[in-house]
Amino acid sequence: MLIAYEEFTRRTDAVRARIAAACARAGRDPRDVELLAVTKTHPAGAADYAARYGLRAVGENRVQEAVEKRPQLAPASAALRWELIGHLQSNKSRLAARHFDRVQSVDSEKLLLHLDRAAAELGRTLPVLLQINAGDDPAKFGADLADAPRLVEAALAKKNLRVDGLMTIAPLGTTPAETAAHAERTFANLRTLRDELASRFATPLRELSMGMTGDLEPAVAAGSTLVRVGTALFGSRSGGRSEPA
Ligand SMILES: *Cc1c(COP(=O)(O)O)cnc(C)c1O
Image (cartoon, rainbow, N blue to C red):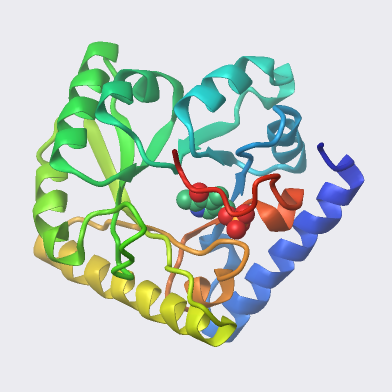
């Protein structure tokens, strides 16, 4: 069930206040941190809410779910951008390249190859982020830190892809303190990696997609430019913490 729009605006205001407070502590400009509304598992109306509030983009973790929802949106939501944040199998690359404005979950050279080919067929340039398992989480997708340089180099060589930056998900701990420590370490790793690779390949890799409902503060402190927030905006998803399928 979708919450009422008034409730959504209250929640979104509160998340923006969290981002602003974290930016103030870090000496950052809140305009440099975008809020991506994660609408997965919620009805298409959740994306309409995001557009109506003035958010620029929504995140979905399954290709098929976005393909079904996107045509259901109100005409006023047409400018909303759709970003894929969940694991992508290479056999769904063409569908993803057609229906998403950006793919954040690119984690292998094989996927790069398929997405580049799909974008070429569509005659478009597809913006991507490279997903890095910066917290060494055995349960998470994403390229290993050690493989990241090769992946970035391969991505930059693809003519039909535009590499905007990096994305990561921090591992959960067994206690809140451990989860917080994982988040700090993971986000610091991604930031350091980005700075190194940006310099090595002489390209900005501007976007650092990191931080969710539970860990957006440490992410902003470490330099996040894009926080992906679902639960704090729309309430909990039935089925709990949902992982890409
Ligand atoms: C679901 C999801 C989110 C949002 O998580 P919340 O804890 O609900 O804010 C962010 N990023 C990814 C990759 C996700 O799958």
